[in-house]
Figure (cartoon, rainbow, N blue to C red):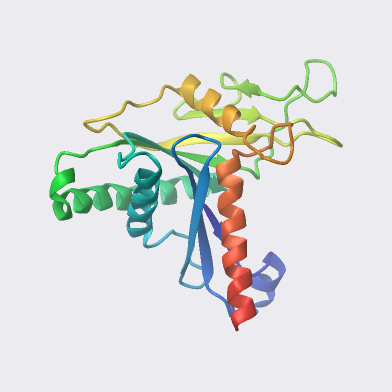
Length: 237
């Protein structure tokens, strides 16, 4: 999921008024990774925490079930795009909306009374200052390079990954942190090496380029969904 703000850093410094709402984009895989869909919605101006997440999550799960012979997902892995470590606590708070939404779902639908999926949430910080090089050299590391020991906070479940090939300049890695997880009655929690492999695999889902992307393609799709919604809003105004 991605948040799209409509005021630049320079505008915020000079105190320009916010005229458009903030837009949230959510993209998700369907019956197979290559099939994806996306939804988007507006929240309050300059709101940094995703609101109304539970209702839109249920909508996404229903769309998934339609493509999967009526079966709801048993395990859900969220990738949230973040810019700094200050967003980790916000992401953990947002996941409480997921728990409440699933509880409400089981109360409202008798056929899903025993439904308790497993979910995990990973924040992908794309604005990290970390850089990875070969020891004693300045060459970029190959696509798919991951680092955990010695480069991350030992008190967190996190890793640094360079999933893409840098065409020019220095490859910018992404720092990923597991901020929330809940074991349900169905599904299972992924181990950190499995999350790393899944992250890298999803960087190859781009239907245009054969090379891997920096972020998982569903996460990039969520940004595009938010941008399209905002462009439609501006055109209507």
